Image 1 (spheres, rainbow, N blue to C red):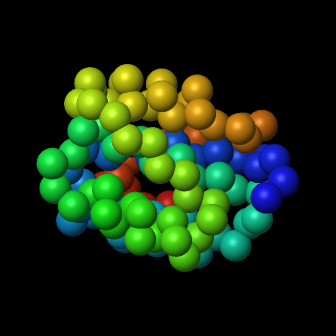
Image 2 (tube, rainbow, N blue to C red; image 1 turned 90 degrees about the horizontal axis):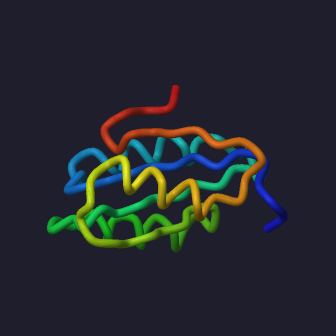
Length: 97
Protein backbone atom coordinates (compact mmCIF):
# COMPACT_ATOMS: atom_id res chain seq x y z
CA UNK A 1 0.00 0.00 0.00
CA UNK A 2 1.27 3.48 -0.82
CA UNK A 3 1.40 6.12 1.91
CA UNK A 4 -2.16 6.84 3.02
CA UNK A 5 -3.57 10.32 2.72
CA UNK A 6 -5.84 9.97 5.78
CA UNK A 7 -5.29 7.98 8.98
CA UNK A 8 -8.34 7.28 11.13
CA UNK A 9 -7.43 6.54 14.75
CA UNK A 10 -9.92 4.28 16.56
CA UNK A 11 -9.23 3.85 20.29
CA UNK A 12 -11.08 0.91 21.86
CA UNK A 13 -11.50 -0.44 25.37
CA UNK A 14 -13.97 -3.33 25.74
CA UNK A 15 -15.94 -2.19 22.73
CA UNK A 16 -16.76 -5.54 21.15
CA UNK A 17 -20.50 -4.78 20.90
CA UNK A 18 -19.84 -1.65 18.80
CA UNK A 19 -16.54 -2.28 17.06
CA UNK A 20 -17.68 -4.28 14.02
CA UNK A 21 -20.25 -1.68 13.08
CA UNK A 22 -17.87 1.24 13.64
CA UNK A 23 -15.10 -0.31 11.54
CA UNK A 24 -17.68 -1.45 9.01
CA UNK A 25 -18.76 2.15 8.54
CA UNK A 26 -15.16 2.99 7.62
CA UNK A 27 -14.89 -0.10 5.45
CA UNK A 28 -17.61 1.25 3.19
CA UNK A 29 -15.16 3.97 2.22
CA UNK A 30 -13.39 2.42 -0.74
CA UNK A 31 -10.63 4.98 -0.55
CA UNK A 32 -7.30 3.15 -0.94
CA UNK A 33 -5.48 6.09 0.62
CA UNK A 34 -7.23 5.48 3.96
CA UNK A 35 -5.45 3.90 6.91
CA UNK A 36 -7.44 2.66 9.92
CA UNK A 37 -5.34 2.48 13.08
CA UNK A 38 -7.17 0.63 15.86
CA UNK A 39 -5.54 1.03 19.26
CA UNK A 40 -6.74 -1.53 21.77
CA UNK A 41 -6.38 -0.08 25.26
CA UNK A 42 -6.09 -3.33 27.20
CA UNK A 43 -9.53 -4.75 26.41
CA UNK A 44 -10.59 -7.86 28.29
CA UNK A 45 -13.44 -8.73 25.92
CA UNK A 46 -13.27 -9.93 22.31
CA UNK A 47 -12.27 -6.60 20.80
CA UNK A 48 -8.83 -7.72 19.62
CA UNK A 49 -10.24 -10.81 17.91
CA UNK A 50 -12.80 -8.70 16.06
CA UNK A 51 -10.12 -6.32 14.80
CA UNK A 52 -7.82 -9.18 13.78
CA UNK A 53 -10.62 -10.84 11.80
CA UNK A 54 -11.52 -7.59 10.05
CA UNK A 55 -7.85 -6.81 9.33
CA UNK A 56 -7.55 -10.13 7.49
CA UNK A 57 -10.26 -8.88 5.11
CA UNK A 58 -9.12 -5.25 4.90
CA UNK A 59 -5.37 -4.53 4.74
CA UNK A 60 -5.99 -0.86 5.59
CA UNK A 61 -6.67 -1.88 9.21
CA UNK A 62 -3.68 -1.79 11.57
CA UNK A 63 -3.97 -3.08 15.16
CA UNK A 64 -1.93 -1.77 18.05
CA UNK A 65 -2.52 -3.53 21.36
CA UNK A 66 -1.35 -2.23 24.69
CA UNK A 67 -2.03 -1.94 28.38
CA UNK A 68 -5.04 -0.06 29.69
CA UNK A 69 -3.85 3.53 30.05
CA UNK A 70 -6.92 5.49 29.02
CA UNK A 71 -8.39 6.90 25.84
CA UNK A 72 -5.97 9.84 25.61
CA UNK A 73 -2.94 7.53 25.72
CA UNK A 74 -4.59 5.27 23.12
CA UNK A 75 -5.22 8.21 20.80
CA UNK A 76 -1.63 9.39 21.23
CA UNK A 77 -0.32 5.89 20.42
CA UNK A 78 -2.45 5.90 17.29
CA UNK A 79 -1.13 9.28 16.20
CA UNK A 80 2.45 8.07 16.68
CA UNK A 81 1.74 4.99 14.55
CA UNK A 82 -0.20 6.82 11.83
CA UNK A 83 1.42 7.43 8.48
CA UNK A 84 -1.25 9.55 6.80
CA UNK A 85 -0.87 13.14 5.77
CA UNK A 86 -4.08 13.92 7.68
CA UNK A 87 -5.33 12.41 10.94
CA UNK A 88 -8.86 12.08 12.27
CA UNK A 89 -10.50 10.13 15.06
CA UNK A 90 -13.45 7.76 15.36
CA UNK A 91 -14.52 6.38 18.71
CA UNK A 92 -15.34 2.66 18.69
CA UNK A 93 -19.02 3.36 19.44
CA UNK A 94 -19.45 5.94 16.64
CA UNK A 95 -20.20 5.56 12.95
CA UNK A 96 -18.67 7.27 9.95
CA UNK A 97 -21.55 8.53 7.75
